[in-house]
Length: 124
Image (cartoon, rainbow, N blue to C red):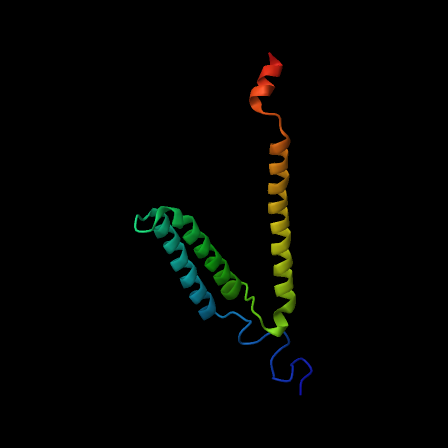
């Protein structure tokens, strides 16, 4: 038995489900195209209740991210993907921390700011 292969006869870190062949990329491109066209349709049609459009676009955007993670970045729940999944989770955490932290800081600064009419009176 060759030392470069694991017990199942595959190279370490490479399996049928984690690697991406041309077929996987084409399926992912098809799903991504369909979701993109659905987003353009949803934003331009009158068939959907107006206030529900942003929610639908958010759902389609999350689905698009899922397609990219699975078909192009090959992120899965397989045991050999633990490090990739943890790196993704940490990246999402950091981005969320920066975005929501910035929103909290800006809201606090806006609350502490002097009203514009009083600022204009002080300049006269």
